[in-house]
Amino acid sequence: MTRQPLELFAVDGLLQEEEADIARTVRRFVDDRLRPEIAGWFEAGTLPARELAKEFGALGVLGMHLEGYGCAGTNAVSYGLACAELEAADSGLRSFVSVQGSLSMYSVHRWGSEEQKQQWLPRLAAGEAIGCFGLTEPDFGSDPAGMRTTARRDGSDWVLDGTKMWITNGSIADVATVWARTEEGIRGFLVPAGTPGFSARSIPHKLSLRASVTAELVLDGVRLPDTARLPLATGLGAPLSCLNEARFGIVFGALGAARDCLAATLDHAVTRVQFDRPIAGFQLTQQKLADMTLELGKGWLLALHLGRLKDAGTIRPEQVSLGKLNSVREAIAIARECRTILGGSGITLEYPVLRHANNLESVLTYEGTSEMHALVIGQALTGLAAFRG
Image 1 (cartoon, rainbow, N blue to C red):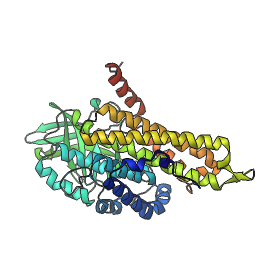
Image 2: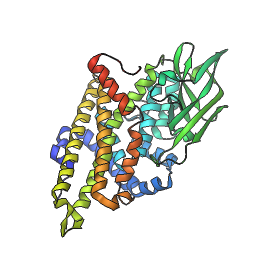
Image 3: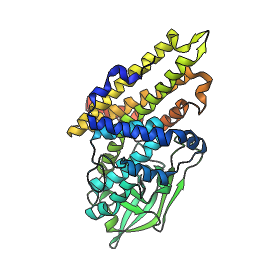
Image 4: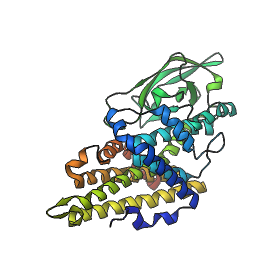
């Protein structure tokens, strides 16, 4: 008889009833709708995003932690648990929900006008529209302050020029939140699909996040009225606040992928027989399983603690960095270790492990590389910024 790894930590007893109900609801959706299809989507490098957007909307997970405008208004822990369940299926699926809710929708909810909120948030929450978030550029990922995309005033309008790269949902989005440099500093703009001069191209030949849409955005003389500007967003702190929201989801999400790897590996180990006994009965295998379970459990307890801090309104950006760094680093290590127990079977799509490992290679570096989060933590400890030489 095997036990689910997190049972050893009795984590279910740390959840409120509503939080546990939300996690179970999302897990049922994942098991019934997503798991049967995800390996095929990953292999084909495709995702039925329009169809899934409406299903995610009906499930209530799009912008679920936001208040009003058709959003569910759940607490942060519930959102984190939903991210974990989605990423247990695939990081690309959690990325879709995360970008829609914590980047696109949050940017409008936090920094937009009432008119912008009314125009976009109900449709985005229902999955009737898809959003994306254009901050990263080809030459400026970890250093967004160096962005080259510009917005200049021309009468009462704005004219945007530049390129954004590695934009999830970019080529299927109905609206893009685009950040640009102006004479007054960094500002955000809502750019509807079809605006003259605005184009998006899907990035092909990916080896990671294959069940996800990743794109390049090009803005060539894109003319927008001033009503397209996010009026409350002044400075780089605005887009960084959106990234902090999305990173919180990764703290839980990456652990969902790790949990799925470990559960699949444990099931395999107790049935795979070598030298006349299940490989789960060998000491080295049990050492690996024990170590992975310990790291998963520690990461889960940290994630729950950070969720409680976020719900209390006291969480700090460097604490989110602690969680993002730990969760993704340990999740990818667990995925790789699980692959060794699965042997040759571990390289096939029959098992989720190498698919998770490939996806986590992207999660390791997007929304802040491990190195950048380590420097955020280092600055919090020492008071000294090491970002620039």
